[in-house]
Image (cartoon, rainbow, N blue to C red; front, side, top):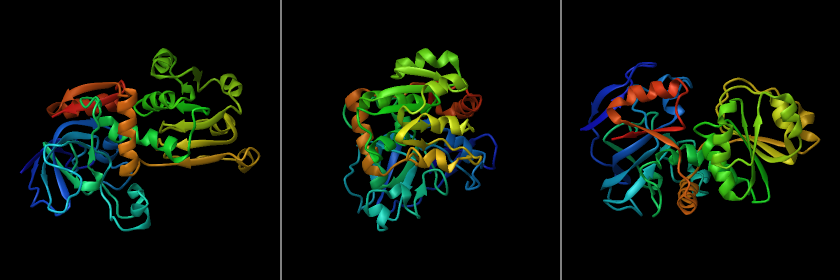
Length: 333
């Protein structure tokens, strides 16, 4: 039996929950959880903000642990291996997206915490391809948030061939944004942080920003006009979208990784005249996740974290909900 923490209904506190894991599947891997990060997506699933949650819901998709069991057809993993599991627990393995390494875009992709029990538990399971071995040199105690938050902000650098000569902006210095700054700096880019919180300016510079701009200051936004090759938007609230697009250089791209639930008004001419683009992405496939972990280990990139014991999960969720996390929360199993 697996001991877990679950929301039995939407918007309810998590409570202790025990479930029968059933016999392990032929390509499954079972991981004993050591730590599990808390992502804002966990809160969204608990509250059923996206209308896709299933209950009981066991959140947790930034999992670090060791393999304790493997199915007979699981490949590339061994018992005792130190691994991570992120947003995805399985995909079909045969569609064009899976075969191209983009299993995160598979129509049959199973989220670790939707219709599947996640990592707020003593054990969790996933398909072997989504169980990512951890490289040597990684700060495993704090690495959990890399499996989702880190992957989410790293993927655009990989996908869009961002070069060290590019100028990159990051909007929002929070759980995603502070990692975006760290990756952009390590990538070799000139980095601009956009924040509405003046007190975060020095922290943003510490994370790697060369410049800090107040995102509510129209004059400051105008001063950055036409300068950025990539603007990574990590917030989930509406912004002054024309001003944000205006910061882009010709062929620049505004890329969304924050889930803004309201429509974005965009003028076609703002895109056409500079050949600018707007795009978005979820996390990434297993190959990119592995590359992200290798890159993080090589450059010493680790989230700034706060730790709570697993049995204080409700306190940790309230801390996140109140906007007090600096900048990612990790539960210690």
